[in-house]
Image (cartoon, rainbow, N blue to C red; front, side, top):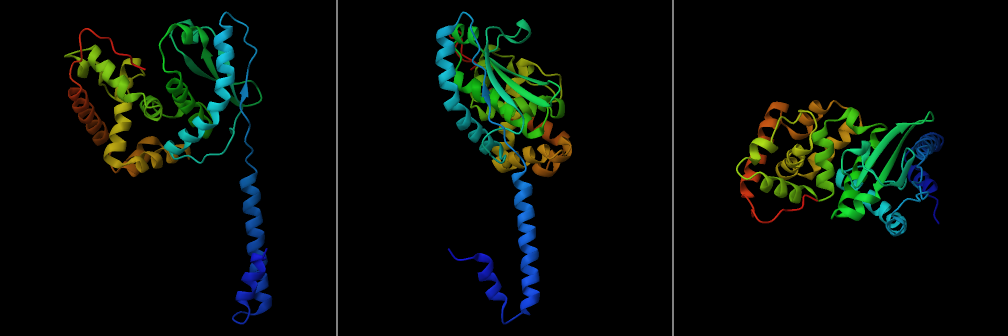
Length: 288
C-alpha cells in the first residue's frame, strides 16, 4: 500500500525546500498522532445485564433476558441518530439493565424506569424493567424501552442526570418523539377530556413536571421538527450537551426568543388538539 506521507512529501519537492517540507510534514504527523490519541482516550463501557432476578415472573424474565440484548445496540444507534449525537457502541458511564416487580417508589405504575446514582466510584445508570407491569398491562414494550433508553443516552452524553440540567418538556418531549409515542398519547389524552382538552393538557412549558402535560411536551418537539426541521432540534440537543444555557441555545438554533417560542408552541398545540376531535365515547384509547 502506498505511503500517504511519502506521496505528500513528493508533492512538496520541486516547489519547496526539501528540509522545510520534511519539517512541516513531521509537524503534521505529530499533530495527527496527538489528535488520534486524544480521540481514542474516551473509553466506552459495555452495558451489563443483571440477571439475578428470582421473583414470581420467571417466564417473562427468561423471555426478556434473551430479547433485550439484541435490542440495546439497535435502540442506542437509532436514538443517537435521531438526536444528532455521535454514536459509539457502549456507554461513557456504567449502565445496567435489571428486573424488578414493582414501580418506582411503589406509586407510579411504570413498565420501565431509570435510576441514576453515584456509588462512590462515579456516575452510573440502571434501567429497571417492571415484570409485574409487563404481565398485567397492555404496554408496547419496544416503545417504552425506546423512551427510557432515550433518557439513558441523553444522561450519558451529559455525564449526569439530564433532569438536573434540562427542562422536563425537552427531555420527555424528545423521548416521546424518539419512541414514536407522542401522536398516540396526544390523541388518547385529547379524547379523554372532550371539550376541555386544551385547558387541561396545555400549560407553561416550565411549569412543574406532570404526567398530564406529556402531550404538551411532545407537541413542543413536534413544533420544532415541523417548522424548523429535524436539524434544528439536533443542533439544539448538541449545544445543550456542550453545556450552553438552554434558552440561549434555543434562541440561536431556532431563531426565536423564549417568549415567542412558548406562544408558537401553544398555538401549534391548540391547533393539533382541535384537529383530533373528541373521539368515541364508547372506546377508551391506549396512551402507549
